[in-house]
Amino acid sequence: MALIAIVVITVSFVLAPLVALVVRAPWSTSWRELTSPGVLDALRLSLICSLAATGLTVAFGTPLAWVLARFEFPGRSVIRTMVTLSMVLPPVVSGVALLLAFGRRGLVGRYLDRWFGVQLPFSVAGVIIAGTFVALPFLVLTAEAAFRTADRRLEEAAFTLGARRWTVFRRITLPAVAPALVSGAALAWARALGEFGATITFAGNFPGRTQTMPLAVYVTLETDPGGAIVLSLVLVAVSFVVLVGLRERWISAWTGPA
Image 1: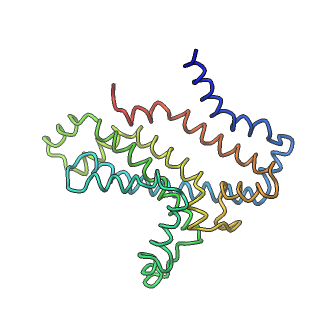
Image 2 (image 1 turned 45 degrees about the horizontal axis):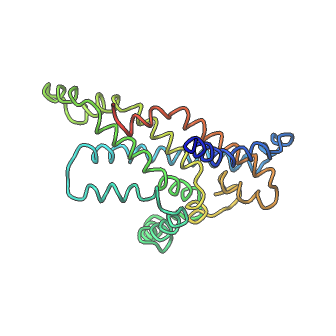
Image 3 (image 1 turned 45 degrees about the vertical axis):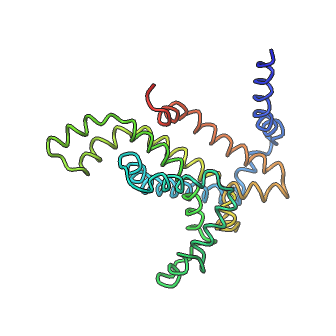
């Protein structure tokens, strides 16, 4: 009985905030809230930036995951730790770190500004960079596990037949781990879509320019709590669909075959 009570309390603790959102939502005015110009701008920006961030995580994270999974080299564990560090960093700390690295006077940003005239902070590009920074670990960890557990016999057979490494990677390895890559990309997208702390610190909160859905929720909560609840439910629904739809693929990618 004690075990059942603990389970019930834990589940209730997790469900209570979500149920509260549903119960307190102003359903009669929800459509008007969702179709207001400010919300549509924030939704459009969130979709564009989160998809762009996902594209960057796939483009750069997939080769990195393959190297981490297939090659032994000094410092591999350090690189893996640094890549996944943003998963546990407080979001505001991630934003501060991005500012110090890519701000106008930052470690890298000063040269981007001086040589190319590129200024990342407080811009749409800054939103994308912040989303990429926090979402990259989800793609790398999922893809690395898939690369590590994939059956390599077909790859070895292709090598013996004279296939080049790039051909084997493109024609055999990538198709074999494609489901895991899709799962990792979806998780990365959901994480980038919901990012708040790093975005507001590095890109600011300018309506119509850098204000994403999570930032719109924060601002709306001060003036229109009902609207904030509706926007929150949209993000909850997106996250729920992603996790339910990819749960089995995500678990199998992380744990490997039984």
